Image: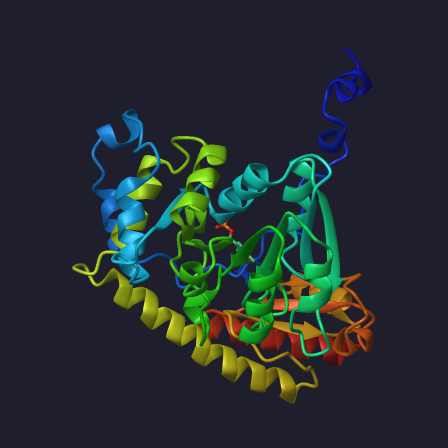
Length: 367
Ligand SMILES: *Cc1c(COP(=O)(O)O)cnc(C)c1O
């Protein structure tokens, strides 16, 4: 059978869907994906090292009940009435399942641009139509225009990837109050941010807040995430997600990372604080070499610059991997000046940051 014949057997929206292919390369210093550059909590490492054979030989829990309880304790929602948690194979899995649960073929998924690059992919994967509205000049969500799309699913991200900026409470509340369908509020970087919107889950039945163990919790390779929201909403997402999604080792590590007795959370908070401290130091250092990072509420910096591609490839030759973006919406003044191009730099131990700065200084000197 030819490749074309196989392609014709597939669903059309799948056969044209590109594979996720960020510009990756083996680099000694990889600050390209916003993961925890200090590693994983020692408590999680210990449970992985000590896991009995049965942990891999038997199935994990059906829907992650022990982890759901631990997450509710962590979010201080254990006694909140009718609030539930759905776990997943990364928060990506929860986002994907939410679209599948609430959207049918042709329905819209509304989101701001620029935002999380996976959203249009998950929309198309589920037969939905992704529609975006540019962020405002102050990098806030354009709440009225977004709501006017009448989408079945509206996606908001705060702090937003890739801009690192926080959405305003008034704009988020406007969307939550007026949206027609479900509002997905992605808080992948909440542990670094001064504000969270988890409280909205108790006021609005339509809100699902997603979080992840891939960033502050240092477990990206194990793929664990979750969504929190009204119990009825969560129950629909759980049906669409299916059983046995979080694997047994990931479940153990995530539980250990949330264990108050082991002070694993202390490690997570201490390293999130370090990331915030290094982020501000890095922001100043980048200004000193003529770059203009946006204010950040996450563990990365977003640096609009027309030279994004050039700088990223110069850095790569020096063993440093950052993420370069091009073709971002130029409706925003900060991006218009840069022709829609920007660098995204993950924050980690200062030696790594120094390598980025040294590389940038050399690259700039060579021009
Ligand atoms: C990294 C990230 C995620 C996390 O994805 P996982 O599947 O949990 O690893 C979700 N949303 C945004 C905006 C992210 O940047």
